[in-house]
Amino acid sequence: MNIIIPRITGKTNRKDLRGFVNRVLDSWFRLPFSAHPQIVRCRIISVTDRTGTTQRHGIINVTPDDAALKIIRKLNGKFLNEKRVGVKRYDLTIEKSLDRMA
Image 1: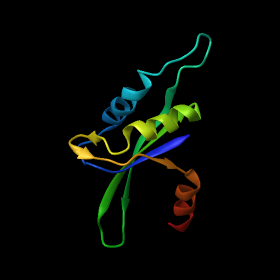
Image 2 (image 1 turned 135 degrees about the vertical axis):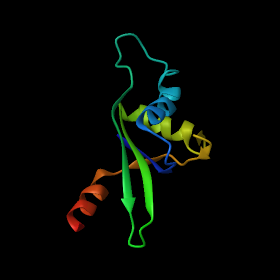
Image 3 (image 1 turned 45 degrees about the horizontal axis):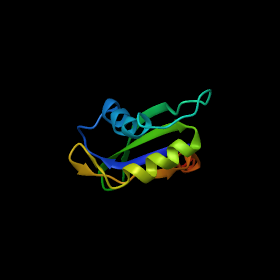
């Protein structure tokens, strides 16, 4: 499942995003022979609107889905690089439709 952390600061990098998410994953309780939750992909995208304002967003793919839901629940409203951030589920079809419009 993909999660998004919208409007991150300019000084936030992928290592910061991974560390932020790993706070939850490192404390994950798992049963023997079960898959450990992991970050599959972590990236930062920049979006510029018509007025020239650029916003940066972190997109993280986490498996399994229940781990992603726990990350959203635990980290939404927490601070990342001294800024309170929202953590939400992200649907890639939105990004694909934006690519077609460009």
